Image: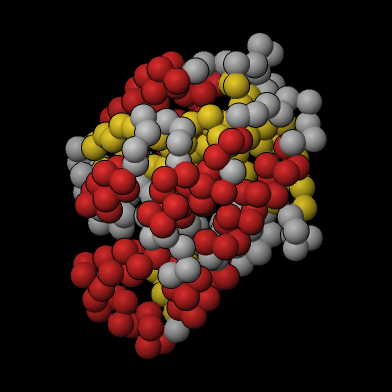
Length: 261
């Protein structure tokens, strides 16, 4: 059964939440999109289907300050607002009859660093963690922008705005503030408390990912001392859309879930 509801975050903003409940619940998973994403994106659906087919109840949601059904403006998107919304959704879920600890966390990109930060803060609540194409640290992220997109970064800093068309929603123009987004991102680094991640961790990245590249994922992978695995999907960019890439994504997830249930 699927249910859509709107809840309030700590700032009294509406958050749109989708809950797929299982009749014979084997576990609970929270799934989070990346910067400018939304809960109906193909890769988010693929994560969801992988857990549903294994008998999980799955919660996915649109953060505030993105292009989904929640309140806020994309120009104000930060790691802090994503992370706080995750905490607020889990806090709300903890009062529902299907809530179960420890739960599983999945996040893409900015959602990846958000779930990683949550797992570092509350390791006892997290059964397994899948930060996919994750931002590993704000510092690494900015260094990557300088290396791969120097002109775009210079323009962003100079004008105060990053303006580009949306790929997920054609016709939509995305505008992101330099001051709030970059300064906020630099406050976060998964590597600082990586020793707290004592649960199984799954990393996946596309070989053509130029946003959160393989070398960043390998840095995180090498620092993990628990049960871990990393997969590279050949030819895939930062966001998985191609049917073949999504099929591989699902196969990896299903195997990982079965192994750690």
